Image 1 (tube, one colour):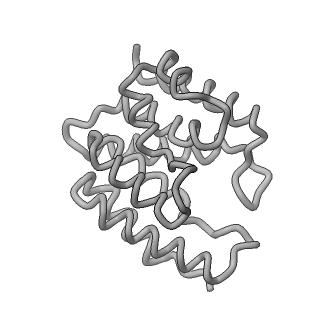
Image 2 (cartoon, helix red, strand yellow):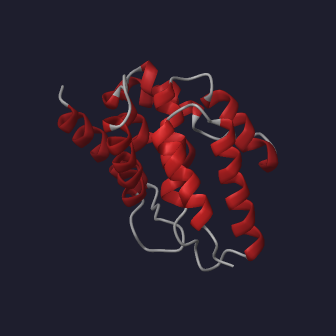
Image 3 (tube, helix red, strand yellow):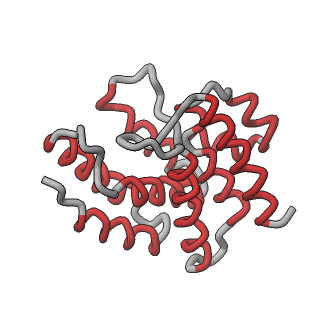
Length: 178
């Protein structure tokens, strides 16, 4: 299957599942698929600038990265639709609900680091995409914590994808909304 068909099949699945969950981008009425397509766009560009990058796998994971966390889709359903490797990559990007909030990110980052560099790239691309103007209802403290978390992601995933690391570093520098 070519990358265009992979993208179309995956984005339709993700769009339907996130729409079924009535999910929008926080602080807006935009459908959540806008965020997912922005993450995929970062992955497309990174793939052009990265040797030995599995774009087919990375695009699927980028479009599905929030599906286990934010919808009713199960790991088994994801595995049946997209295969075990994609499902495991998405699972690594999924925060565990049974952990205290302060432990969720580090746990996920540790699991991401056990995956291929494409999964690392998706996490970097996700945070790049999220470092836009924060929702109007976020406090100054929440904005600061989000920026600090972005620095943690950048530090923990150092060596994963030079292009995306540089891009995230620039986004972090520019993320001052208080």
